[in-house]
Amino acid sequence: MNVELKNINKHFGAVHANKGINLNIPTGTIQGILGENGAGKSTLMKILSGFIQPDPGSEIILDGKPVVIHSPADAIKYGIGMLHQDPLDFPPMKLLDNFLLGLSGGLFPNRKETAQDFNLLAREYGFSFDPESYVDSLTVGERQQLEIMRLLFLGARVFILDEPTTGISAGQKEKLFATLKKFPEQAMTVIFVSHKLEDVENLCDRVAVLRGGGLVGETKPPYVTSNLVEMMFGKAITLGARQPAEAGEVTISMKNVSLEDVRMKIKNVSLDIHAGEVIGLAGMEGSGQDLFIRACAGLMRTVGGRIHLQGQDLTGKSYHTFKHAGVNFLPAARLEEGLVLGLSLTDHFVLAEEPKGLFIDRAAGQKLAEDRIQSFNIRGKPDSTVESLSGGNQQRAELALLQTPLSLILLEHPTRGLDIESVIYIWSKLKGRCKTDGAAIVFISSDLEEVLQYSDRVLVFFNGMVSAPLDAGKTTVEELGQLIGGKGWADKGEAHD
Image (tube, rainbow, N blue to C red):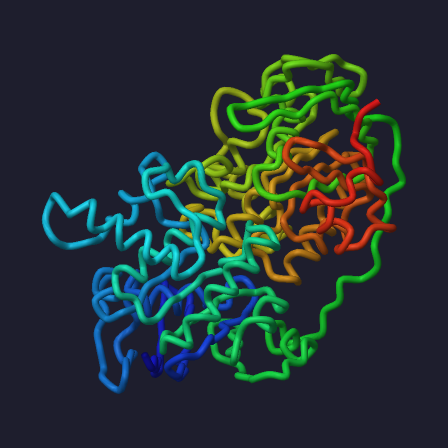
């Protein structure tokens, strides 16, 4: 399906999110939409997929015919489906029930017939699913595959993917790209929205770059990375040299710590983390790093061993005890665990601070919000609700909630959804906390280059095993990839005494 966007404008109050965008996407193309956080990418795609309406005078033309898309249901009728950064599914339900969502045909669809179609689609695209299993047993990458299958079943011919590689592993990304590359062979169009240059360069036939709400350029392979960066940001940007920590006293000490939940066991991990250093956790999703970081926060009880924070035995203590001892944990699920829907930025910053008296000082809260918004470069206002912010700005807001001083900062995917300039900025803030507060940082990331760039030491997780700490400055992405895949463990050893 050929997609043509003509003079697309969208205002949100005084904010001009899309500024007269004109873009033609031919049938059978994998079209990249590249831009920094807040460039207008998601707004443009939500207009095309019916989630929001453009300003008057905007036009959407499909296969030469002007259309008006009032809703996502309308979009599906026209053959347009959108895969969101966070899959729109129902984890407590079975895969087949999620697959049936959105189908017409009454209250009682033919489950047997639909299960046959489900299995045929899964085989065609190389997915391995049991339709009677539950969504909450899937990884994020598998949930994306399920959503792609559902959109195919609903008749989508244009697939919009909004930051789909955020939070998935390298292996899952390879599978996703292999699937998407089959679509042009079937005259289907892919619109791939991202801020990751490498992903766009490896996948897309052509790229359109947005900046400040407007279309600033289009290009085709061979891509020149420096040119794409300059189009995105209006200037050249480099990561700079690694900044190794000057490690201080032991902040947190784990001795023979064992952890387990219904799916995973970790046995006898011993590790000392020092003030000022950054520890990166790498591994396939569900390999145990989530248990480890939650144990460091007091959210996961140990089943063996001891945890000491700055000499204080916190084994078995609550999250609030860890928090009062100087530990802050920022989860990956921003709107589910990290932020509160319906509350403004001011509300969040006020609630994150220690109370000073019985009554809230709204003026002081407003000033605090203004300072944090400026300091973390959040594109929002003190009275903006967190759900009104873009994903990248929600992430900045979450990071801005970190208290001062802290002894240990725990982060799940701290730069998920952020462009390269924002990643550099956020890590400069975090590294600053290491120097000024003497805080140690432990973080999970699926981006192996980020892990090596910003960590001092790295722990790799594989099926409940934890590697001995690796020197990030002497380790390569390839070596990490081998360990994550289960190879080379005999040479590296585990984090045991």
